[in-house]
Length: 306
Ligand SMILES: NC(=O)c1ccc[n+]([C@@H]2O[C@H](COP(=O)([O-])OP(=O)(O)OC[C@H]3O[C@@H](n4cnc5c(N)ncnc54)[C@H](OP(=O)(O)O)[C@@H]3O)[C@@H](O)[C@H]2O)c1
Image (cartoon, rainbow, N blue to C red; front, side, top):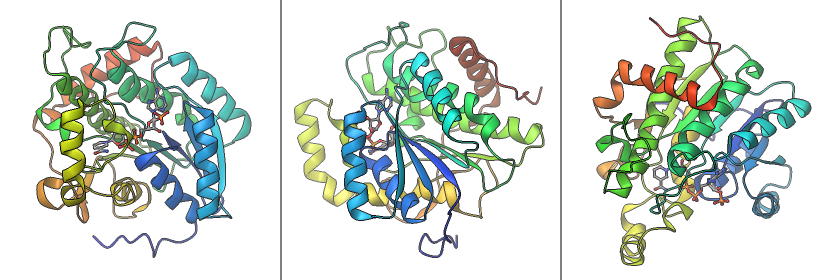
């Protein structure tokens, strides 16, 4: 792979949205895009945190063109309000990075009664992408990047128990949401190609990185994790590289899954990532797509291959 961020030319005039831009990997992704002169819309659930992050980003890159806008992905009304506001300000969207995510252990649900990780990580991004698609120019530099995780590998989509009421392992429910992110990226790319669209959809995972994601872990596990983190994990800046590769590399064609290539895929040079065979099941991806349309109450204007 020949892609290098330093050799990537200015992207002036192009617009990107990064969800969850105020912290961790989203913050670093925003920083790199802003350095390359994208206009970056920081779509965040807490505007105060978003403004603080913007101030910090401007200290690092004073010429950055950044716009903070409220978006709570766990609430479909908030997703709709964000899209309306975005469309009133911007005539196009070149890069959408579906980065925001939660890892929770509480079994919490959103106001519609959907388990919070599935609602936030998958359904919110599913609707967001659907409603923004008509603004994305039809060319291969246009990218829709979904953040998945190593946690997808042991997961399945529990169509008969999406909320995980009968599943003891809390991390399996997070894994389900990240598997949904990966299968959504694949199915979106298949449907784009089926409609002869040149827009590229693909997935990335950051490996492992100490970020806000693990704040809800049990304290014993969290401290163990934090002690090990300098040795086995990526910094948030390195963890943002797969997303940036997916968003900017001319080498991708759509449907790829990119991530770090080092020990256990936790960190290292960016390349094509390994994936579970379950994640490649087109029948499951289609079923998930149809269910997601039903749950968001919005059909995509993209037909499946069937
Ligand atoms: N860190 C890792 O090792 C790792 C591994 C695999 C995959 N990932 C994925 O990488 C992505 C970024 O995670 P991270 O590690 O950078 O975690 P992070 O530091 O916790 O950042 C997550 C971001 O998502 C935002 N967010 C959470 N719920 C939201 C909602 N309902 N609406 C809008 N934004 C929301 C958070 O906002 P607040 O600041 O307001 O909470 C924060 O800005 C996630 O998709 C995660 O699943 C991370």
